[in-house]
Amino acid sequence: MSAKKPDYYAVLGVFRDASPEDIKHAYFEAAQKLHPDKNVAAGETELFLEVQQAYEVLSNPKRRNLYDATLPPDIESNSVVKHEVFFSRPNLVRLNEEQLLYVLLEISPREESEKLPTPPLNICLVLDRSTSMQGDKMDMVKATAIQLLRGLRAEDVLSVVAFSDRAEVIIPASIETDRRKQEGRIQMIQPSGATEIFNGLKAGMQEIRRTLNPSRINHIILLTDGQTYGDEQDCLNLAEEAAAQNIGITGMGIGHEWNDIFLDALASKTGGSSAYISKPKDIQRFLVDKFNALASTYADDVILDFKPQEHVKVNYAFRLQPEGGNVQVETPMRLGPILRDMPLHVLIEFVVSPEALVDDVFILLEGSLKLSIAARSTPIPPIRIKLDREVRVNPSAEPPPTRILSALSRLTLYRMQDRARSAADDGQYDTAVRHLHNLATHLLSQGEHSLAKTALFEADNLERMHSWSASGNKDIKYSTRALLLSGVKEKGK
Image (spheres, one colour):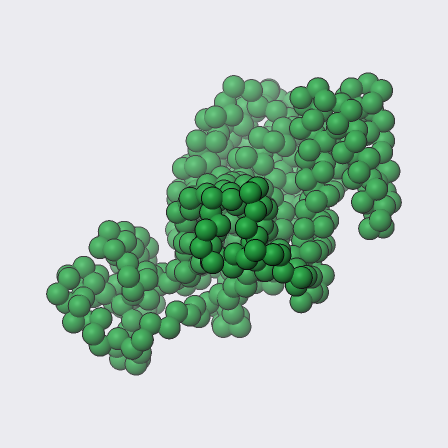
């Protein structure tokens, strides 16, 4: 379209076949972000007026029909991201049994992304200060928090909450700050009390909301060394609230006493993930790396919205990069962020029933990708997604792409440890030992000798004592998760 006549569908970030409800919802979202009462950035008043004009035209059926008649043919393209899809097999086969099919989805910024400014941060550190944090852990946490504070840009916001069985706001969210006074308050944090994560998260959410803005990267970093008891569901409910407001959560656990299953579930509600810090000396590296990743965020929220297809099940989804982690299998699926220098890679496992394979082509999934890019004031048009495969009598001899073979190989290692852990939790120790032996064999074949030795050591523990070592299950889980990232970095066609 000409520069004088904007594409109203692109302005609102909807498809041309969007329903009146879709158009209304998109307008309210854009208007809330661009309203002059909330935004004073140069040019955003004009954008707000453009959004209003787009809504006035598209919400009126007669005006919309007249406008549609002036549009050129709909050639769907996205100027901000590109995506590729790789399948583990070129076709499905007519069989009287279920079939597995893997899909690797890669989403990356287009070259124009370099022109976008780096969005400001709105980060809250939610720090466990329970009695178990005393000593090196708390010293390193405080030193790193001060380091991060000193590295902030003028437009960034950093708030700090310390919690045990109650929460205290150490540094409130504010743009106008006295850095020296803030450093002093961090230095005064003293460990005491028990661990109640909900108190900390609730206070952290309140601070994030004080300067919440869609033009910022809004994120909570939870750091703990212990387990919370009785408030897990409250925490998960709060995470769902955070996701609805595009607030991300990262969970970081120190040592081996914390609940990684819970932190994984908590973070994945927002498209985030958990991290394992085995030694206090590594606290600084993990926190600094996370801050750098947030500062280099391109799209902070990528959502796959779809309607479930009959006779097909999305069985499993895992984000390979930029941060390895489980993706909750639900609609919509929060896939995670795209970084400027690291695309988003997600591997999805489908189970297809025999009843589905009647026609020559079967649709696995149909929906859209929706993105949130803080550096862009206007909405991002959704990307239509349609995953389908031919149905044949015989399987194709065509090999899977190298990229997906590499991803599947690495994911197999992670899922072996997952099965071993599940079996041990169910008291099936012989099965758990067998999974760990298989894992060790695969690790040795890939040159991962140290991790293979750890897997064999844990197999021996389970066989003799029916228990893991203090940190064994976390060592294996997060080490095999790290291999996923190294796998997708390999160049493949």
